[in-house]
Length: 229
Image (cartoon, rainbow, N blue to C red):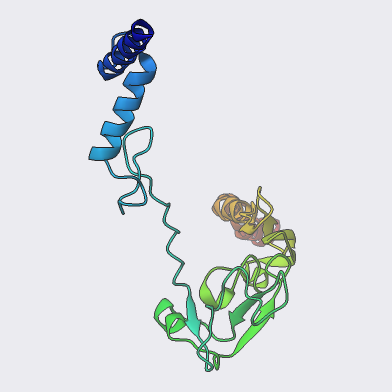
């Protein structure tokens, strides 16, 4: 009975000795990973404990892209709400879709910046308006097709003036958007006629001595009676 007890005690002591031995780390990937994780957790706090953003793959901190700064081409009306400036490509607060709000009177950039809701304006179709083709004529962004020099028949299509015919003395340009003055040959013909006029006068002066023979013949006829006596 004593021997089995001694054997059991020896086995228990041996097992406790084996358990107390340090865990070998050579070629033990799981143990190394566990130790690295515990050491990293001890010296590097988690994302919840640190306010700084976690580094990205490239090494830089992740940042949200900033929104573009809104354009300042707007002013406030009498109610304090912002609205586009006159001449904006789209102004649904003043005009229907595809129309443009243009000031009635010509304005400079300074005057445009100082405009408000009380500034008179008109809604136009810049794609086909004959007097504000392509933009606001009062702001210098459009063109009055009827003011083209020498134009007779014109239209506005897709924001460009199309000249169909011109007044006498003008012809349509190659791009069809204007008139150019035509130089006729009438001036050259006038110069030629003035150069030929002196030659005619010279011929008449050369033939004028023929008329001086008349007195000579009259002298001869007067001497005829004397011979008969």
